[in-house]
Image (cartoon, rainbow, N blue to C red; front, side, top):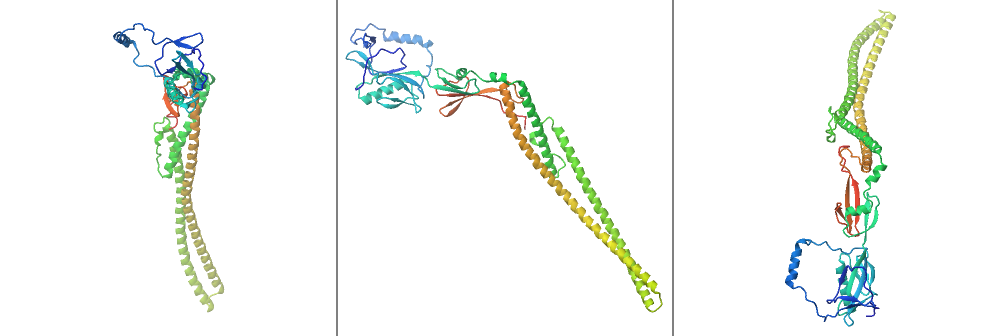
Length: 453
């Protein structure tokens, strides 16, 4: 065959999977380390008959397990010890092919690179099935009459990995019948007990107290926002947000905002009433000025008639010049009084227009101030929500590592997950673990309900 095939002693390690061609006789060791077998022509001793053998099986059936354990299948990174042996019928010896035997590793692609036949798929097969595949492939490649006997023994299993909230995350050797709880034991167990001694309850009290202060401020701002919405809509009552229903201090928060709403409404009503009174007063003044102007116009008309008469008499020499001058002075005074009255009436009209503008401006400024305040409060609520989310994380972290139960939450619980072949599998402490698995342990709390609605 072109191979240096030297006989060797039998290995002390048990063979996990062996496959051969014909029925092989019982082998015995010789002085030259070759493996000899008795001739098949040797007379055999009498054996129990088939009926007796079946009866023995029937008697043992009740105590035999109903289902055998699933055989281990090869996985990536498994280290294998492979031996190839051929039975030489001519000299009744076993001959080991040392050139092919040795240690092999299942690669990342699930294959084993084997001499003469190249890469062979091994992952997902039992050691016996893989040994059969190797024997068949060698027979076909080398043109042998019968397939050589191939034994595949798992020298070292591929590792497992443990991560998350454990004392010592890392890589650990796999062993048969490994479960999640055993994997956690390899990693030093869960981490909470160690962290609890390093995190006193004082930190839990401080973080939860800060969270409560933030939550109270959040509720107060939400009620204020509801009050601003009511004022912008012109409503006298504050609509309670659905998220705040059932809050213990809701009535006190509403009472405070109602007091602000009523006080602002009274202030606006007083300012509006003052402007309205001013307009009414100015309107009355205008009416008085109009009456005064009418009276002055009547007096002025009479004075002008008298001045014309006296002027005519003065021209005829029937009236003195001083009389004419006196009448002219009277007419001029009446004209001045009429002009003053008309000017005062115009000023009153201007004041009325100014009061109306102030009334409209008062309403516009109120709406602008309410809108600006609402925008400010809305921004404060958003910023406070981020702070609360951060503080909730701090409270949960303190609860996880101190063992204190957060109000509204359950007791901290571990969640286990196995990552296998890119798939995440939910697990418990008794879930079997396979070589190459990644076991993840996470300490979690239930979602906190009630701190911020």
